Image (cartoon, rainbow, N blue to C red; front, side):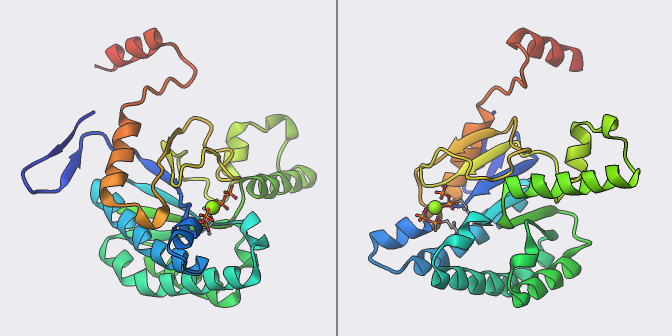
Length: 257
Ligand code: IPE
Ligand code: IPE
Ligand code: MG
């Protein structure tokens, strides 16, 4: 995979992942380094969100999932949680036009019923206004936990089994996938995590089974277009085997020609 740049023009990727998932981490550390309150880190992180949304759309990435707030994050200090919710509501208001202009459909995964009513309303408004956009799906993971999503799916499957709508013997991997929050969204090709943390932190547990993981030391508010390109470049250099051998992969590639 090569990344080329024609003169001063924009960077062009020759291979683009279909789905990029991101754990946006390090806002607190960014603020701490500057002797600022943590909320200032979250505020500064919004511009990186703007950058990655615009850049992903420009590159032709079809799905972008951003981990904005986890089920565990509800246990943070009350002030921080309420600041994050306010910022989130502001973000939804300020970005709507940009989403429409860029043909971006906004979606969300997570237990949205736990969000403050104003945030739920803003989300619903943005879902409705952007529902026909087809350039890119921006999926926000808010109040999201991978385990919570699987519990939610298990309950719905169990209800169908109880009512006779579904035969327990017919339950397959596809059945689980069909009962996730966003069943039509393909598994992420790449998971990017900022701030040097090598863990999944309860993000997309089912969907990340075969995603390539790229970790960068850059803190989320400092995450730039250049660093994003570098992460995508790292992803492109990986060999994805999906459990097969190199020889099988080579045969498959030859057969496809
Ligand atoms: C990520 O930054 C944002 C959220 C989890 C909401 P953090 O707030 O986790 O920042 P660090 O990890 O403390 O630096
Ligand atoms: C993961 O980051 C959640 C989000 C980025 C929203 P955390 O900062 O909550 O994860 P841990 O606690 O370091 O694992
Ligand atoms: Mg963190």
